[in-house]
Length: 573
Image 1 (cartoon, rainbow, N blue to C red):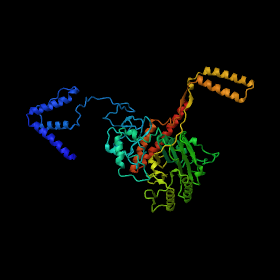
Image 2 (image 1 turned 135 degrees about the horizontal axis):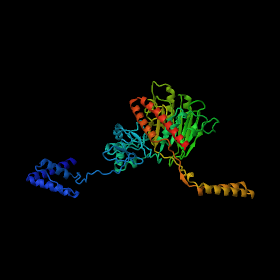
Image 3 (image 1 turned 120 degrees about the vertical axis):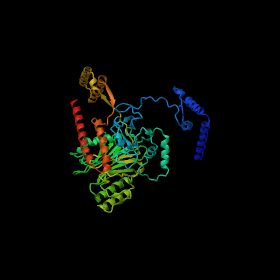
Image 4 (image 1 turned 135 degrees about the vertical axis):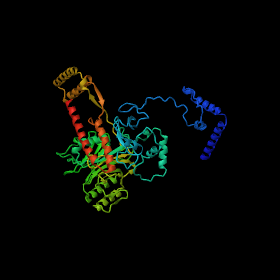
């Protein structure tokens, strides 16, 4: 029907043009001139004239284009206008003639050259995973095209200067879970595409995992291979990824066990872990090993020592918002041993009877299991042990959702869950040891407990002379009360009340909140992390890890140097 209508319209236009050209030459020239002048006279331009010898084909083409109705007849002046999108670094406008990207969190544009984004990565923005760190809000921007990527995956993606409908239709389905309890329909892609086309503001509608606002749960899994000598690199990685929960293996710490008091020679968690996290540890009694779980201080978490058995495992229950509580565990099996599998089975039996959502992650050291077919390779070592692990996972209705190898070509670190529909993305990130880190984003929100801001005195603006006078009077009053027979409690109440009153009167104060960012994590360090991620991505594609390993060591040296210089500067001040 549409083709028939189009044929009739073209025939009608052709007949009109033919009837015009059958007249005198000045008739159709005069008609076209009047038509153009009537349309464009409002722009303040001079009347438009045609050539002395106009071509009839050109005149007919112009008439057909004007009659089509999709040609801008009054586009306005072509003067260069100042852009309303200044660059976040150089502050020069990011115009339509420039190549730039926009941060999904702060909505600030950056030139491609200012953020040192190569042309190859810029061309991949509309069809592959490329990540960069915003220099303003320090948030990670990731293009989510496929779940089989080698970078961090979030729901954010680049907002290019030119929109591509094909790219929008692909990324509109980027928020479906990795695994689902029921199969998806054939038209689910079309439904998501139609919904995304209706929304003009793609950044706001698709920004599900807004890291600064903590709308969803992010879990980081890593193998430390001794956290003692990687404190700076670990803190920088945590500050870069901003996870809510960290599950670590091979901490190589000692002295702390679930449900028991620390030993005398125990290593304190505050020496190695960030201060805005609460540490739950299960250290090995001998050299090496050890697992831990770090939970942000504003998340309600309870350690579950009753779930721990005679293996390297740690369990913590996270209180969720409007959903069942999440019991998350960190497990490490240094050597394939049937006893570890049995103890893991006992530990899962305690939790499975509680009807809770389970998530277990860690280093299982079973590279020969094909998780897609749920089978063990024929030439695998310790085939019975790996098959026993697979049977334990199946018996407890757990699903393995991570698919990317974490050490070379071997998938050693895995993520298991009893509710796979909660998992949005699970992908690799450059690690701090010979294992890659796993970043898992969940479509669930924990229950946060808001912290009140603390009061901080500004001693540089204090009135010290007036304060000394009032404290002298306070001391005299305390002595007089003592001689009159006042009790110790009365003396303490008097001293405490008057002391704080004098401080408030003579020293200005302000309310502050604790900062989670590292003072030495400057722009140079963030650029190194970005460059490290690019080299990691290139090494994954080419399977050549030489350049990445060298730069990883250089990045570690620069992080330690920046931390040392920052501490030295603070001590001097």
